[in-house]
Image (cartoon, rainbow, N blue to C red; front, side, top):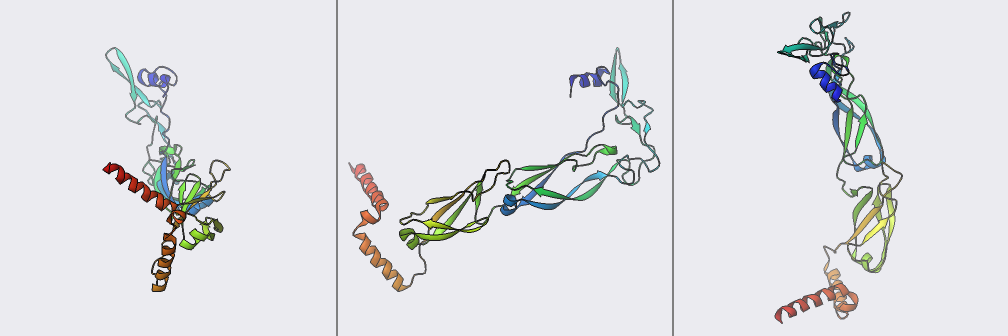
Length: 287
């Protein structure tokens, strides 16, 4: 509020002193919208139902019975304020008769009881732009609560909340996922299929790939809602240990382990380095 308005409200001076109060704009509303990752990335038009106050149709938001209208307040003569004397001072206060509106409704509308608005659940169409993320807000101007006695409506803010996905984790415009690979593929290399939001793509796995290795698929992430940049898909491969082995399969693995055991340094350098470090650690403790 400007200083002129403040001093005018107290002393009746400054710009606008003594005039009736402005109509109170309706309240803004917030609607929390749950979205799937697919809808957030691709964009979609959705319908939402919002309980709110809307302008009363029978009285067209005026609050006065049809065929009548609000009259100027006789207490403040339409100014919305009255002057009260306290000793040597004259102080302006909000008119108690019209509550500062400057007008009085003699015959209130029976539908809204003179408020000019009624409760209603509105159905609205919301266009979700591609790339929105949790916390992003979409403003629908004039779709908030209607103000009293024909005052302008507030705005509606639709706040996005993207649900967790079964496969992907989003970090800004990048997507992350874990892809299991077999022991054979990790050791010998090969080609696997990985999921994207646009379908499956081929990913080449080089031989001797270790578990936890991260592969980047450029341009397979999310298009930014604020620019034309597109994020990447980061695929983390996880070595899956074979389960439910038959006796013959277990014997074959034991034979492989026996043959590789003779050349541990060559075939398992990380394992060898780890246990060498453990041995040195305990040797240092003894010394």
